Image (cartoon, rainbow, N blue to C red):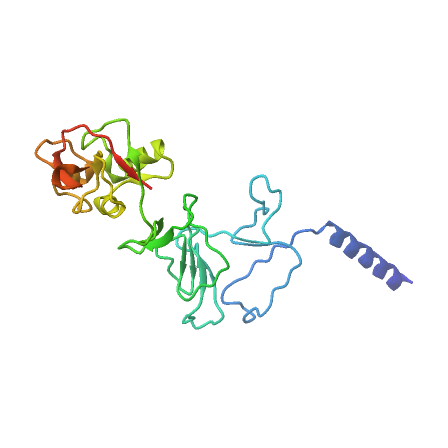
Length: 256
């Protein structure tokens, strides 16, 4: 009878403790004193590197299923399928959120993939124009550009005038054209030649204008020094570009 009473007490006590327990904190040591852990199963959330409650993103109200917190150099999450350290296709997330797939070094990119990527679609930026093609520059950075066989169109010259410095560089010239003629950019001489333009225009990007630091294109449209030159499209050389002092105030020729 006494043994039965103790068994009932133990069952009730165990039930109460089970009902109160919602979180389990497991402290482990490496190397494990009892060998390696082959499995760890849970039906709830998992936190590694912290004992604080797991919270979700602001406003989401939902905690992540897996939360990893590291400090210092120990801030990389790595997924491998080998323990030798020579895995050829790891997935890593470093301390600043850069992701590497097929490599342990994202290389400063938000996403770096070493291997072939297959996808159903690609959206690059929000300023693409129908019919444009993805073109890489010398650094391998891709942007949407007019196709080579797409005939350019001269749409006009800006009503405001600028000297070689207030154009604001190539970026500034493109922006000023786009502000007055939606979807346009600063013309270069090759576009005007292909389009057969026979109208005097303002500033254009000349043949050597892409070389920063020279006196062509007003040193990348960054100077108004009179001894430096830029280009204007006119009849002076049979509808082509001709040099103009960078101190001159001209509109900007815009193409689309």
